[in-house]
Length: 240
Image 1 (cartoon, one colour):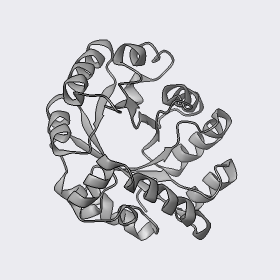
Image 2 (cartoon, helix red, strand yellow):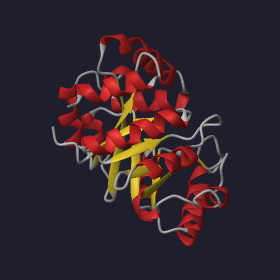
Image 3 (cartoon, helix red, strand yellow):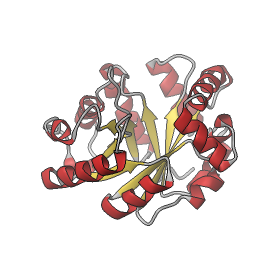
């Protein structure tokens, strides 16, 4: 399998010792990038700094930093030690009101402060249009390959797809899909594309090719039975 347009996504709260051990393996396997999301208990930029020290060519991305909680100024202040030429700063509105305006202002501030690529997380058509206009890329989420192809933008289009490749990981995948399906914004997304949350996930490696035909970069957001180094390494082995 050609992995040059396939990336690995991990939770931002992944312990740094696991990130340090796993990042070189992701790089050696030929994956394009490592993406970490950003949560109150998981600093994506701190995790990526660990990955950067353990690798030399692996691209790095945040998917995504909520700018209602972590504004552009704070993001810029946390970039020391990160290889900007390898970095994609993914940002999203979080729970902010007037999210379009906030995103446009934040992207402008980030562009003024760094040469890193700027990627905007987009769920609806207005945010996708804004991303195509002001950012270097758009990050999509929870879509079937068909819906991803329809929503492909004029800029670099990246898709996060929850992925479980072993039977013991399926309950965790089903639980996460059900949780997102209960959120109003995501429920509207699933209704709009005519698919259930679980139908937007990857449960066999054969489905990867369908997604790669629809987007520029596919991020396999890894779902495992237990978030241990051994389980993540097992996930990588299933793709070789």
